[in-house]
Image (cartoon, rainbow, N blue to C red; front, side):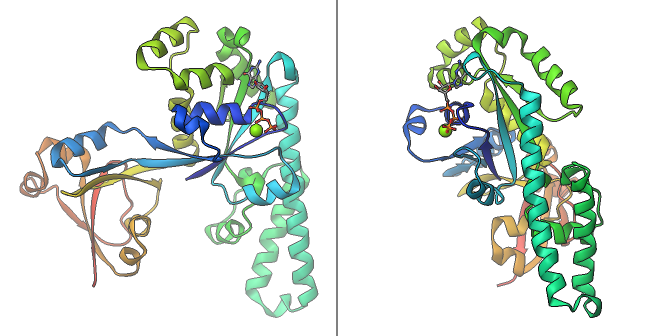
Length: 339
Ligand SMILES: Nc1nc2c(ncn2[C@@H]2O[C@H](COP(=O)(O)OP(=O)(O)OP(=O)(O)O)[C@@H](O)[C@H]2O)c(=O)[nH]1
Ligand SMILES: [Mg+2]
């Protein structure tokens, strides 16, 4: 999953990015992309069981971006979701709700321009009437345009599965899941929960939102465990921004985790809720997708309870599933693929 940190100039995007990058080495890197390993106790459990050479976590990629501009709009279309940073500290005094709405409006305008361009091109081709595919695309785009005209982001538009497929290709900005980070000054931190609630109330949406102090979080990221605990309790911070963003992203993107195991490597992978084991095979390797035969599946709980695959087989909990099996959070999967 790839998440871009976005926002206006000087709101603390890079500060938040650094806080998420945690180690000093990562923070010093000139790179704008940071890979976050998602901690998972179940992966530790499997690692202890198999004692393989390698342990690989599921990952979330975070990208720091420059201030929003038309070029950046183009670039961030490729992200799976956004972290929008809104300033709430003295040097950048502003109304976060107002700023939020203004950015959503920019997204709406950008999506409208894209749709109008495409509709014009289809109209010019003049073959819409004879071509049912183009006709359907036009219908979906017209529907989207009407929605945007009412100043509503596309994430709130309901369309058929077929319609969704068409829309996916456009990578519309207002269709992407968004998390908000309210970047507060230290002095406001004691009131974080009220700030979050007031913001949601003002924009009249229950969107995933956290109030943090970016500069403090960046410091916390560099501390050793002991200092970190003391420092965090001093400011009544119960969980670091890293942990909170991982949880928010998991919820917002509807992510579940499945595992592959063996003597060489135990690994956690992300998948979207509702996706099939065939998709899981694609995530692991395109060859597994193309040559998919069946998948061996055991849930993590059963695996631990019955002490491994053999025990699960005896208990009748080891399953062979076909392509259309919907993966559940915690499944341990072995793909059987053709040569
Ligand atoms: N008081 C206060 N200042 C902050 C906070 N977060 C960031 N700043 C300050 O705001 C300034 C800009 O921070 P950056 O993180 O570079 O902001 P940015 O959004 O990446 O800026 P651009 O990339 O130039 O758009 C810096 O001087 C930070 O120290 C905060 O939580 N509190
Ligand atoms: Mg920056």
